[in-house]
Length: 326
Image 1 (cartoon, rainbow, N blue to C red):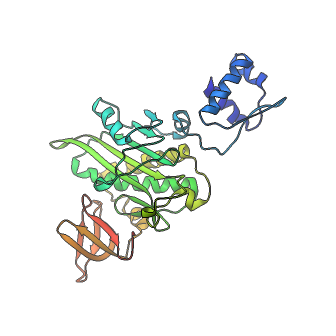
Image 2 (spheres, helix red, strand yellow):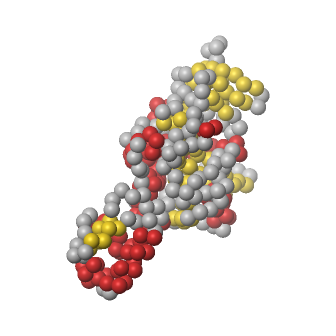
């Protein structure tokens, strides 16, 4: 009944009388009153005015399974949706589900995550009501060596989703950071389970800073959020829907050749370090060069002083701008 009441209020956009809701739902006024109070407890801001009825206040960021499901409008990504109010890590929870046979496209979302991790084992906390913390399950048929490129495909989808919902033009810091104003707004972590030459599953974890207004001192120079960049609230449910729809489009193009040949031009156009000097921090030692984009396999192309070009593979390599984070 709660879902039907929300649908009625959204459809109206104005006040709907209690009597009208009773007649539409075939329930008593008391039942409607109780359901409205439950919806308020779920986070919906609903006004009640005598002789006018109930009205849903637009703009409050309600974040639950029903709201996310309504915003998806996808063919397969997220159609099996699992929402946790709080969990350790969406990647951890999705891995458990994958091992039990969860289907491709399963999407795990959390309102808060307490043990998330980023690339190279770094901690990635997800405070309540502050961002999008989600993980998507894939069961691809291609060989494991192609899987690293999925991080870059996901970066394109996130950039498109943010652009659609906020109007902000994001950049990408190879291979897995989305950047606004020279600061990180999103990180992507891809993990997989393989056996010999086949992939059991791939998990793409995405963390987007949405409503964070203040970062710890050690992150203030390198991290930002959509709220800080726009000065207003962004619907997290709508953002998830936009990212998942963009993902389906980009992933379909990737599957045509299992490389980035059809996406390279767009990805390189968003690359914040393109044609700028970068420092590559590798296990064998660090070196500097000019970033010239990526190749069709997702490797970063770095031009050295002698004009030779090195191909940088992601993994444990870190790339930094000479004068800062980007």
